[in-house]
Structure formats: C-alpha cells, structure tokens
Image 1 (tube, rainbow, N blue to C red):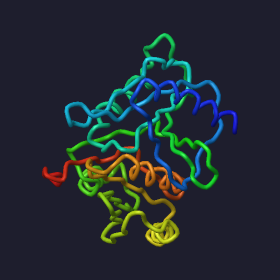
Image 2: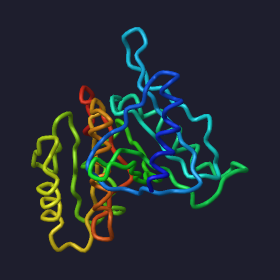
Image 3: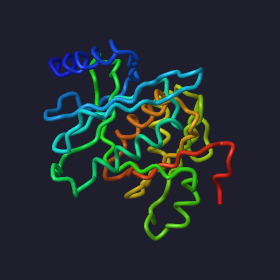
Image 4: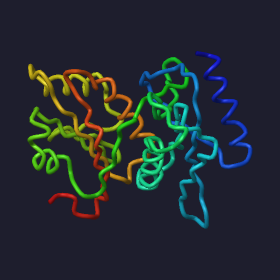
Amino acid sequence: MKHFFRWVLFLLIPAACQKPEMLLPVNDNPGLTEINNLSQLYIFYELKNGDTVARLNAGQRMSSTHWVVHIDRRLKLKYLIGHLSYIHKKRHNKKSIHYKAGMHLYFSHVDSVRNVLALNRFDSLQILSPFYHSREYAAKYAQTYPEPAVHIDLKPGSVVVNDSIFSYPADKRVLGKYLRKLAGDAPRVNLFLNADYNVYYAQYNDLYAFLKNFDTLRMHLIPKEFWYNPKETVHD
C-alpha cells in the first residue's frame, strides 16, 4: 500500500515540475488503496488570461489497464463535464484492439485518516446535464426505477437530501443516519445525485466517495448524475 502511494506521488512530481501543480481532494472517506496494472490520467487546473481552464493530460493511458483519474480539487464541475464524458467514452470503447474486459475507472483522493491515496470506482457514471433533475427523471422512468427514491442535491456549501438541508461539510454520521432513516425497511432504495455545476470538485469528490459506501444491495447509487447550471431551468 505504501509503495503504491509513494509511486503515485513520484508520478505526480514530474507533472507538477512542468507546471501546473496538482492539488488532489483531501477527505476522510475510505477507498481502494492498492491496484496493479494502471494508467494515470490528470485533469489540471490552469489560469489563462484570468480564465479557469481544465487541461486533460491523458496521453499515457492504455486500454488494457485500469485508469486512475486525478483531478485538481480547485476545478468546478462545469469544467469537467466534457473531459469526463470523453474519458468515459474512451474507457468503454470495445472496438479498440487494446480493449480488455474487467478494467475500471477510478477517481483519486487523499484519505486524511490514513494519509494514503484512495480510489473510488466510477465506471458507469453518466452525466445528464442539464436536461433533467432526478425527480423528473425518476418520475418519467418510473418503470425502470420502481423502488423508493432519495434525491440528493449538492450545492456550494450544502447538501440537500429530499427536503432536508445539511450544511457542508456535513457531519457524516448524521447524514448517514438520515439516509438510513429514509431507506427505512424498504428492500431497496435508489440514491439519485444532482449537482450544481458551480460546486468545486473537492466537495463533489467528498460526497461521491461518501455515497459509494452506501452503494450496496439495499441502497443503489444510480450511475446517472444530474449536473446543472442553476441559472438555467432544469425542471421540466
């Protein structure tokens, strides 16, 4: 585990030396800490003429490996939609001669409790922006999602779960207890994640990694996510 963490840091140093630097999200969520056969992709934060730019460096990826995506925590979600959609499409391109089944996509963050690099899978993540809010989507496709739904809306500085507002950073014990209360005795509950695309990636990564802990047989974190511009109408 330690060798892997040091190896990742070693790979980050050359990238940082060429400017820009990479600041990873730091939070207290667990995740996978060891992995073999990987390629590393980077989405850097840059400023050009006063404007924020997200620069993707994916030149070293190999289709026959797992892909670990390191994203600078200073980027807002709106700068990541295009890059993540591109990565998702390339990762699942079965027509590639190098395609190998069983290879996954991972987000990285620093686990502040164990002080190690941690990874969370996002293989099937699909960003549906800005066409729906999950409430409308779940209602429209009720036959596909007949189970009780919990709608989570990530906003700058807060997390809204159904109609309850939790300030960010939220007390995760309280938030987790509330999610379990909403699930009640239902055999299965669907968790839908919405996100204001002005949220910083650090906040998104923290909540995403936290919700992955609830992605079990009883609670299912729906891979379709709804990133939206709050200035636009997102409700049909």
